[in-house]
Image 1: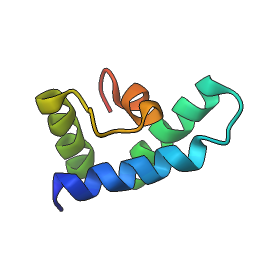
Image 2: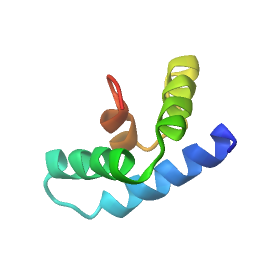
Image 3: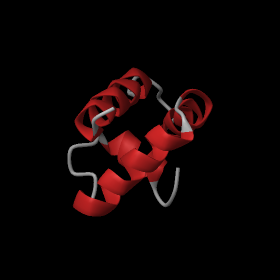
Length: 70
């Protein structure tokens, strides 16, 4: 899967959790979703993309959820 698609999917997950009023729970929700439903290869590819460009295209919740490691 292309890293552009992974960024798009990750941002969709982040937008879903935008409605959570507790910021820490929102970040944890994104993190848990990625760990539960994404393959290790998908998570690794997203991590490599973040390391390459700082995750500039990612929703703020997603950036926070994937740092330091997903």
